[in-house]
Image (cartoon, rainbow, N blue to C red; front, top):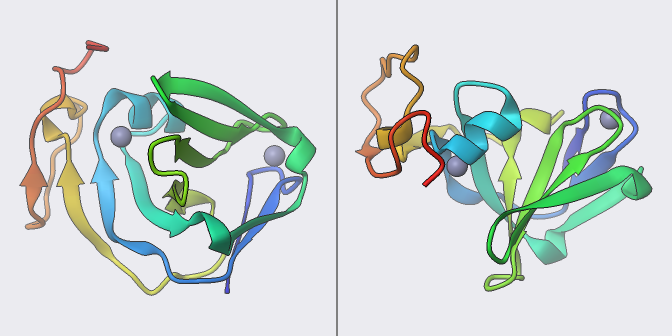
Amino acid sequence: MLKGSCACGSVRYEIAGPLIGPVTYCHCWRCRKHSGSSFGTTAGVRAADFRIVAGEERLASWESSPGTRRYFAACCGSPIYKRNERTPDQFGFRLGTLDDDPHMRGALHFQTGSKAPWLEIADDLPCEGGGPPFGSRD
Ligand SMILES: [Zn+2]
Ligand SMILES: [Zn+2]
């Protein structure tokens, strides 16, 4: 069981099963902007394993691409999960809101073609390129 929460603590969730790897550092503009950080750290989680245990009424969402909604805590802005209607059994999940160690480690950089220019990738993890150049939303 993994526990997590939004920044202000109003939204809390539990994950009853393992994360679905790899733990990915996603450099796409959506992950960057929605986290306010240099990239998003993501993995999958089975929808059946994911349960909001407090503050569900505070979740808001936006459609980040057709068919994909990103759910975030409207109280403080923390991104919580995303749901693609084509794969409703699995959510995309941001590791930054976890309160427990999932015992998995970052394994992949994704969409490094959109990487923030201030960021130097200084590890030896595999990089998958692609994505529009920084500053573009294509
Ligand atoms: Zn909050
Ligand atoms: Zn992304």
